[in-house]
Amino acid sequence: MRVSTSWVQQQSVGSMMDRQSDLSDINTQLSSGKRINQPSDDPVGAARALDLSHLAADTAQYQRNITSANARLGLEDQSLSNMSNVLGRVRTLLLEAANGSQSDDTRGDIAAEMVQLRQQLLGQANGKDGQGDYIFAGNRTGTAPFASQNGVSYLGDDGQRMVAAGAGLQVATGDPGSAVFMDIPSGNGTFAISANPANAGKAVAGASSVSNPNANPPAWDGGSYSIVFTAADAYEVRDAGGAVLDSGSYDAGNGGSITFRGAQVAFSGEPAVGDSFALGASTKQDVFTTLDKIITTLRTPNGGDAQMQNDINTQFANLDQAIDNITRTRGMVGARMNALDQQSGLNDDLTLQYKSALTDVQDVNYYDAISQLGAQTTALQAAQQTFTKIQGSHLFDYLR
Image (cartoon, rainbow, N blue to C red; front, side, top):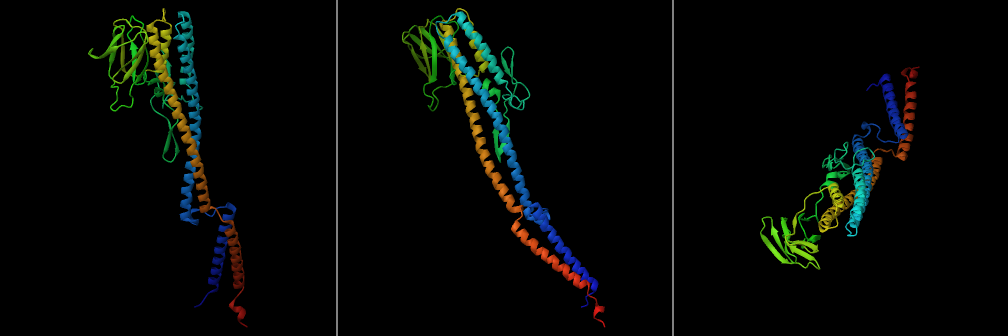
């Protein structure tokens, strides 16, 4: 086979270009610190590196979400704490007002302070977070959730803002005001009792409870009943239609509890014949209405009688329900913050794993790269020397 001089030169030049390309690739890897600088360097590795980069970016976003959510939940918890303090003060004042030594004037003073406490509560309920969004407005964060005009109305919605804290993990960053302040069960949470305004005696309904809350079926059936005193020492329990369901004796001197169909109500004081108390399933009453009713009761002149005591006890039970509801909400907020903290730790671990895996896939091994650099440099030098020798060789040099 004949080999032309031009062909030999072309082969030599091609060989040198290949060595220079290899040497350039090694130099690029050493200068960038990356083994994969373009997809063609390692198509499979490049795809894996892209997946790992996306996972790391998602985890970083989850961490930013957690930081934002914790800040918002922290503000909500602080607001709820302030509200608990306000309602605790209301409760203390209500206990003072229930003392028989109070006069109309002193009860009026107590009511005046409660008006200010109501305003504080309303201000906290319309609080904002660090971004200027209303905390208790649900998803309508641009609108003040509570408006006070002829009572307090809720202008937000029942939604909850959610954030992604991890793959498949959504955490609420707030609670709607409807659940925290509006939809509060009255009475003891199961049933409520109220005195007939026409009562003439001194009987006062006190604490109430479900006598056997764990019964199956439930002992309390949720019906509407009335307790009617047929004498100073006797009572009847009647259903909504007036039918007598139960009867018994009552000790006006020592008081006592009346129990029927799972409901238990403590009474004190001597009733007049015909005095009655209505008892029915709990309804919903917002905390602002409870405060308004307390203030109205305390401002009623000629107070201190049994009717006022019954009204105070009724609203006392409603107030305790409002306090319990805020306490439960704070518990849920704390649980979410704990979940976010735990997820943040998991995200940190995942970030380290992704970075380690990404390093294994795309980062250069300097020991191997430097070794290859030396080998490629030697190969290029050899190709250059060979080309020099071949280029200087001609057939005519051997013809004498």
